[in-house]
Amino acid sequence: MSGANGGGWKFAFSKRWLGYLAFAIAFAIACGFLSNWQLARSKEAAAANALISQNFDSKPVPLTSELPTLTSYSKGQEWTRVTVTGTYEPDLQLLARNRPFNGNPGFEVLTPLRTADGSLFIVDRGWVPTGNDSDDPDHVPAPPSGTVAVVARLKASEPAIDGRTAVGRQVGTIQLSVVKQKMDTGAVYTGAYGLLDSEKPAPASAPTPTVTEPPTQDEGLHWSYMIQWIIFALIGFFGLGYALRTEYRKLNENDPAEKARAAERDRKRALKRTDSDVEDELLDASSR
Image (cartoon, rainbow, N blue to C red; front, side, top):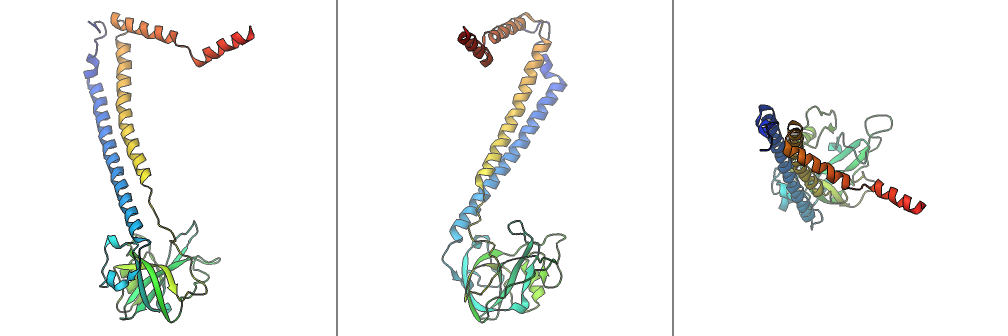
C-alpha cells in the first residue's frame, strides 16, 4: 500500500492542513464577494451609460414639464435637456469651490435664472480658474442681460461633504438647500439644477463648459476585476494543492511506490530537450 513508511495522505487531515484548507475556503469566499461586487458595479455602469445615451442628446423639453414642482427630480432624469426662459440674477450668483478641471483648480459659476413665475432655477454656467495671486478667480464672465433662453442638462443636488465649507458668496458643494440659504430669497428649485448647454443671446465671453461630451463609464474595467478575483480564488486552491503534493512527496520519499513515481518523473525530465539544448545542437551541426 502506498505510504507504508510515510503515512500516505494522513498528514492532510492534521489540524495544520485543515487550517490551511479553511483559510483557502475563506479566501475564496472573500474573492467571491468581491467578484460579485465588481459585477454589480459593472451593471451600475451599464445602467448609467444607458441613461446618458438616452438623455444626453435628447430633444429639449420645457423645465416645468420635467420638474413640475421646485423639489421634483428622479434619478432617471439625469442629463435630460430642458429649456427655460428667464432673466439671470448676477447679484445672487455663487461660486462652487474645489472644482478641478483638466487638472487645474477652480470654481463652477452658479447663476440663478428667474423664470416667468418668479422662481429661481440654478444654472451651472461653467468653470473659471483660481486667480494668479489669490484663491478667488481673477475674473468671472458676466451672464447675458435681459431675457435669456437657456438649454441645460439636469443634475441632482449634491450631498454635503464633511469638512468642506465655504464663506461669503461661495459654497463647498452644489447642495441646493445650502445654495437657497446663501441666496436668501424666495422660491428656488432644490430638486435639481442645470448644466448649461446653450443660451441665447450668447455672451461675449463665458466660463469654460465642464461637460461637452457624454461622460461614459468603463464597464469593461469592472468585468476585468471580476474575473481577476475569480482567478485569485482558483490560485489559492492551486497553491494549496501544490503545497499538499510537495509535502506528500517529501514525507513519502522512502515509499517504494513514490520512489518509482519519482524515478519516472526524473526519466521524463531527462528526455525533454530544452530550447538551449536544441540551439546547441544546431550550432554544433553548423560548425561541422
